[in-house]
Structures are given as structure tokens and as C-alpha cells.
Image (tube, rainbow, N blue to C red; front, top):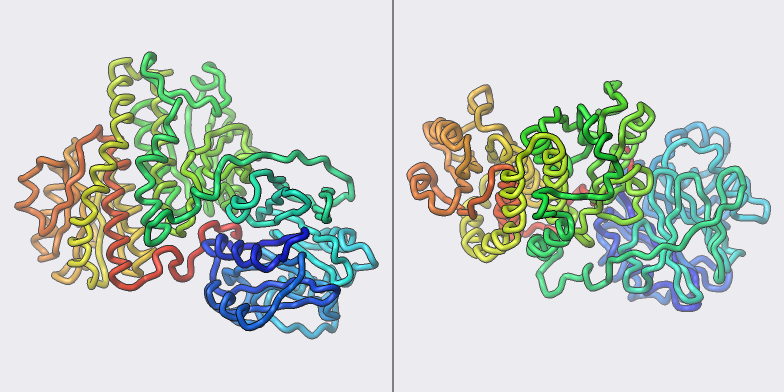
Length: 606
């Protein structure tokens, strides 16, 4: 949520800052701005809208200097205006700040500071004035003193106009990464903008402050104690983050799925033992056998991947499993024992609600593990184990390949637990072989994209629709509905097929289509009856069906066929045509599929 970028070194800062903002635009794009120090002068520029607006303004001026900070905003406190855009200055003009997060006690701090004329409606401007209040010649000490009075979340980078050899960065609940170059340092909200420049990074932890000078980094905690930090190496590269000839990132990431799925399962399937092995679980066989309950904590798309995992854990391992929306979990006083296993599922590993929920589960004594994409993220560092999904950089705001890989990892965990408990070797072999066949079947769906595009054009002008699915395809319906509303802005809802007649069916008419996932599995006949109820209300029906099912044409107005696979694995295939359907509808409507309105990729505020 919002993106921070910073640079200090010997090169001109502006090109890197602008490029970095473009790479971070998926975190927020309501407004943007940057400040570069030229000698002891602050040069500042801001714009409302996407980064292109800022780039146009930059063409009309000359920004020189080799130290600077920049920000792309997703609005929380205050509307989308130039005044509310970052960076923000202290009233005396000496200190400038970029800030991600929310300062919860900003009213108290405003009263504490007294009579200051503020130019914005943001909590961030109050914070920079608080730092100025404590400044006595040492910027790091001023930041530390200010943050001791702050309650809330923050990732900040601060500059002083008289300290042109130093940036100060700090985090609490909002990520910050420092890239280590040759005689230069890069700062960012995540590693994506750094990939073209370095793969050596330092991750700040909550409560840490970094003084980043031209030739060194020194890190402290809020008690003014120095901390030794390790330089880590990340395995993503810049090429992975490029569009590689695709029209936009979302389409590229949809087409990435056969490849990144292989990355997710590589080395984690043991055919000889007919099981999966994910070493990051960090549990002994005895501990695994004692687990009597699993809770999967997630938000949005990740929660629908978690639902796929729920069906698998219960059917394969016989372990009662719940999916909890992270923002609700810790507020309902959840019942957790020492034999409860809690997974936090998050692409970014920085989702604020999920992090807070995992900390609560840890306090209550559960086994806490993470399933994340971003190496070195907060969830990866704070949990006692878990698994990287190896989806590579996902830069479109609407998640596609991360959903698939999160689902795959949960299926592997369910297989691992199942084989350790009650699952026969024969069933384990069938699942392993079916998992290995998925990439080829994914590719066959992608090869049919033109036919899906043609169908999409028939549905682009509807204003409402329903998605229906049953069993393990119910989360597919949830995710398909979310994708459509996220990127096309068409109102859609999702239900289990049998739930339609309990109220939602009242909405059906000839201008309210239904998209049904009805592949050949044990609930096929039940779904058939549910769709007949829909047809009786004159709604148009699009069905996702198994290749070879000719009968379904008697029921559907349009059919998209997918290859056959085991029922629990169907979400790995059945979601792909819905991603393409949403994508082509959104493109036909002229939407910005990579940067849909009001959304941000990583939600790092509650």
C-alpha cells in the first residue's frame, strides 16, 4: 500500500527514482512525487494520477542531485490532491519525508506540536513536523525521538537539506528494503525496483532505524542500540519483472502459470514414497501427527487459495480445517491450542491483517507457518517455517499466478499430511502423477485463449453476473468473481451452486448471466440441477466443462472446455479460463488491467 523509493550514491538520482516509482506503481497510483537535493536545495515535484503524469512534469524541468526520495500514493488520510501527495515537508522546510502506513495517534501529536500551519490533510505531514520538533543536529536521533511518540504503522525515509550525505529510514509494520550497490544504496518498499541494480539487500525489521550514508549503513533499534544486519541475496532478476512482449503484466502473468507452477512443485514431490515433502514445515513426524486442527489465514485472492487447501486437508488428511479472513481472526478471540497449525497465506508476505493475525496465533501457542511469494518478507521472517511459492515477481495488481502457486503448495501440504496419516500409497501415486500433469494441461487452456476472447466479447456489456461452483470449485467461483469485478468493474457475486435458490435467484433475469464451473466430478449432477434452475429464469449461462462433455451443450449458451484432472486439483486448471475471461472483458471495456482503480497490490495497513 503506497510505494517508497530512495537513492544515495554518485549517480543522478532522478532516473532511478522515476524508474522505481514505475516498478512500485502497483502499490498505489493516486498521486506521486519526488524530492532531490541539489547542493542544499530541495527540488520537489508532485502530480495527481499515475506515474506518467509525473514523468510529463519532469520533462519540463531539470532535477539534478545524487540523493533523493520518491513516493507513489494509495490514499488513506486525505483525498487525492497535490497537497496530500508525498513527499511532505516540515513547516520550516528543512526536513522532508515519504511515509507508508497510518499514524493512529496523529490527533494527539498534532495537539502536542501546537500551532503549525499544515498544507495537507495527511497524518504524514504531522509526522515530519514531529521529527523537526526533535531535530537538534542529528537526523537519526530526531527520527528515533519522534517515533517513540508514534502509535501506528510506518515505513519512512527522511532527508534533511543540510545533510546531503545521509538518508534515515525506519519501519514498523510497513516493509522497507535497502539495496546494496557499489558505492551507492537504494531504498524501496519491496525488492522489485532494485532488481535491475543489485540483488544484495538488507531487510529492516519492525522497530529498526537505518542511517544510510554514501559508504555505509548503520542500523539501530528504538532504544538507540546498534544492530548488526546481514546482507542477503534475492533470487529474482530484472528480466522476470519485465513484460517480455506481452501487452501488459497481467497477461504475461497468466501465461507464466505453467512455468511457475513447475517452479513451485519442483523437488517437492517424492514419487517413490507417493508423497510431497516440504522441508520448510519444520515439524517432526510426531508433531505432525499431533496436529488436530488447521487454520488458514488470508485475505482476498489468497483466502480463495486457502479454501482450495481446506477441501484438500480435510479429504486427504482428515484434519478439521478452517479458512479465516485475517482482518476478523484476532478480533473474535479464536480458540487455539498447542496442536493447532496455522498457515498465513500471502503473496507479498506483508499483508498487515495477516501479519497481525499470525502474531496473535503465535501468542496463543499455535504452530505458525507462512506460505508467501516474496523472499525476506515479514511473514517469511516472523513465522517458524513455511514455504515460498516461487511465482516470481507479480506486478499486476490482480493476482493470477500467485493464486495458482499458493493453491499448489497447499495441495502439496495436504498430500504430505495425508500420507503421514491415512492416505494409501496408491492414492498418493495418483495424486503425484496428476500434479505433474498439470503444466501441460494449463498450457492447453492458454492455447485456447482466442476462443475464450471471442466468448468474452459476448459478455462484456452485462452489468451484473453470478459465478457458481460446488465443492473444490466453489473457491474457483469466488476467485473468478473477484477477478471480474477487480479489473472490469462489473458487479459480480459468487455462490455455492446449491445456495442460489435460497435468495440470490431472485436477481436472475435475461440480463443477468451466470458463469458456472461444472467439470466432471462427484457434484456434476447436483450442479446440473442448479443450472436448470437458472435456465428456467431465462439467464444466459456460460459453463466451464470437462473436455468431451457434449451433453453440457444442451444446458449452456456458451462452453469453455478444460482438461480432466482429479477433483481436488481442478482449481489449478479451472481458474485459468476465468482469469482470461475477466482479462478480455476488461480490455474490451478499455480498463487498465494492471492498475485497476482504487486498488493496491500489497495492503500494508489495517
